[in-house]
Image 1 (cartoon, rainbow, N blue to C red):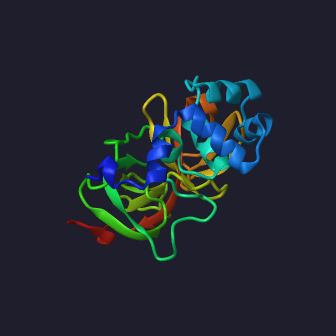
Image 2: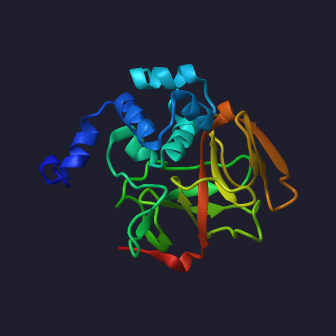
Length: 229
């Protein structure tokens, strides 16, 4: 475990900031006014003012992800001051991360996602793929709603710090406990629309307030890619 004495001085200073102070500093570094940051995140200017004053109750879920993207840092860094990785430049060339296998996602509208906490080193193995997201994690999938694109028993590698791309896959967790891997059709400030490859499952549109999280799926790999340490 890294102790505070081993951390770079700049990172210690970042960790001593409050979340509101960090938002203000990053906003100014990006050259944003409060209004411009609010527009980028899809909230009111008042919300950004409150965040910078320390009232961050609404800075979670999609708002946290959009704010992180706008400020070009990871959600982990925005929340804690740790593990900064610029979303503009990425980590140094040649630096990749292993994605820990943390649980199972059921492919379908009535799915379950188990063991959603994913500290590095936890789980049943690692998947070695060229991900540059230090928070990447892997899930084994079950079910046929994404066949033939994703087979039951295969593994998806999720990159929570990547931006979402319409036409590509996302892992979605809903506030009622359901979770799914779907194709993202589009996202708006108030809703997202998803589609299964398997036509029997069809299209699904969800309001933003129904989403607990929505993460980009970067890789789909066979079970043979799992490394057990």
